[in-house]
Amino acid sequence: MDETFGIAIFSLVVFLFSTVCHEAAHALAALRLGDKTAYHNGQVTLNPWPHIQQEPFGLGLLPVISIFLNLQTGIPGVIGFASAPYDPLWAMRYPRRAAWMAMAGPATNFALALLAAVTVKVGVSLGWFKLAYNWKIASGTTDLTDGVALLLSVMFFENLLLGAWNMLPIPPMDGFSMLLFFLPEERAGWFFEIRQQVGMMFPLLMFGMSNIFWQIFGPIFIFARGLLF
Figure 1 (spheres, rainbow, N blue to C red):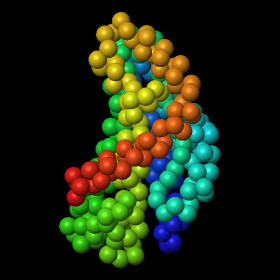
Figure 2: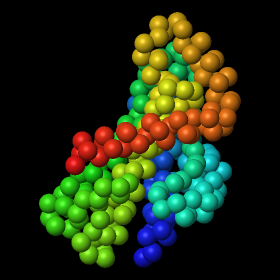
Figure 3: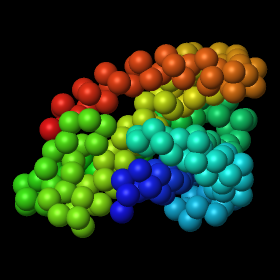
Figure 4: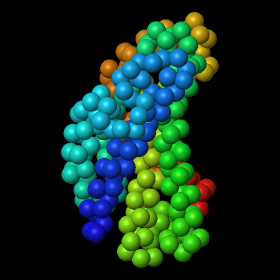
């Protein structure tokens, strides 16, 4: 398999799977904490279709377009977005529950990155993989294991990226909801008002933060790779 083509295909598959896991985690956490909105929307599932129906452009068309635009870079790169609805009245009544619900998504991405890293470490100990030191965390010792190592590298890279991106402390990112752990409950209404108003400017924020984020993510990736390997 041509590596550039393999990276593109694996990036799209991993992005879809990881984003579905992220949104399903939000939906499941909300259900367990008392909000059935996403559950009734059919999103407590790893079936991608209900999540694509919720965001047909962000989780359907946009990732495919971005893959073709990013095909020659040689690194995983998918642009897209998804969402799981929640009851704002529930969130204002139970702001700390809403914060835990928000944290469930990035936590799932970090867990998937850890799973990929552990699988690589097991493969290295068995002689299937050898460690790599660019954005890929491993390469294979045969053609078959090289393909598996590429998939695991994309899974580690993209989930670490998705987790870090979603933990940015700006609305409407999940990381902004960490404030709910510290704000007095009577100020929850103020928090959600700010989140909604600033969140409407999200495309501009995303554009403005992208260069800053890549400068932040580089050291995060190097640290995580060094910590694990």
